[in-house]
Length: 210
Ligand code: GAR
Image (cartoon, rainbow, N blue to C red; front, side):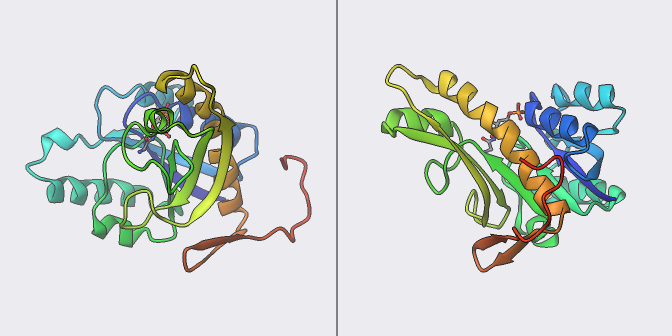
């Protein structure tokens, strides 16, 4: 079976949703580690509960970003994963690490990219006044929130929404989209052609299929 590691900085609800879909067999792969830059991340508790190693590579304990990323790469390499999953990992990764895992690193962002990159995407959507919002799972490239799109899921935006209400609505879809994308990756159904991801639909439907 293929393996992946998850990088998360905080709450870890996407990490949990992914673990749940590994447990029930929907994702045909094994999660071998949780890696966090934040020693207080709740994701660490989730890893412990699932019996998965939790590695803390604390940004603050390194002198600069280069030293941090060297340590981060070394930690990821300990597990030699087929895929690196950024699930609420709130730092911009440098070019060395992004190149090293080119085509093998995915991120989730709480907007319909290319709209609303960066922080507080849901609040940006409310303030802009869009009527549809959502989430995007994409391959990671050197340009932030700009890599080839794998899956997007949408939600309506209502007039009385604020950033928190919209975040909760989008999060429900994140918890579906991320497992879907990871499943497709490990089924070998994703091909990157330029900036477009092609999804192979010529595979026999299987029981867990959405
Ligand atoms: C999620 O909404 C994710 O899309 C977002 O952070 C949240 C993490 O929640 N990521 C970004 O904004 C990346 N720029 P979680 O820790 O409960 O999965």
